[in-house]
View: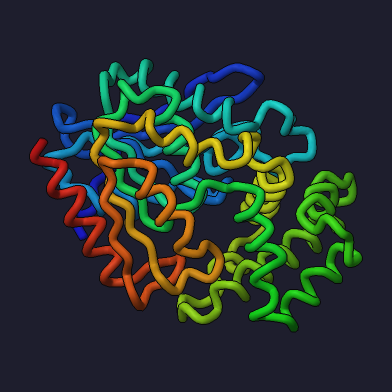
Length: 311
């Protein structure tokens, strides 16, 4: 990966509805603009993401989506209004940030939930996107969410039973967890967040990457799970299948899609369908990688970003 760089500019942008999103810029002020769109939803940005980009070639923008990271208010606060935290709000925030930074066009990079938000933004504002690089493709269809929180349970029945028990075996597990994450009793929210993260780690358990979800602590975990359950319980506030249906709007935007064949939480089918609907995208299937990727996934990301740095 490229050397780590410190931000040379940062701030909190007022995006309305009482929300302010944190942003930062590093790399070359005159370089090719690139926006990192973090996953989760609700994970927050990571300084490590800057290292995918050549700091001499790129003007690297990171931001925290509503309710997480250093954005305010934080979703761990029960008073934070989740009604104004939807995909449409996040797309509008990205466009407001672009205007605030005076950027005409930018490359978009991200993965997992980040890929859903990237596609939603790019299909709404294709003229503002120069290239797209995605690792671990998802579109957060209800069918994908049903697989992640129900279907894949056939491979991890013990862990899935514990996950179901945490929601009193409700018919709508994700909706039940979303309700618990809005409960006034912090102890109820903490128990639901712990159960949710334990399930997420179970799905990733064969990738040998430890327990990245359970490792989240305190308000970071509470905010993350509250945002995740909120979005997934509402189908990401998108019409089912709309992002793949409308992928024709991405015509002319070069894209690189990278997906692990062994991704248990997000099967390869979604990346395959998107690549077929988006003629300017190339799909790279990493045979031995899962959702979190690995050495080969990282190499493909670096190769794509280095190539696009040349214009």
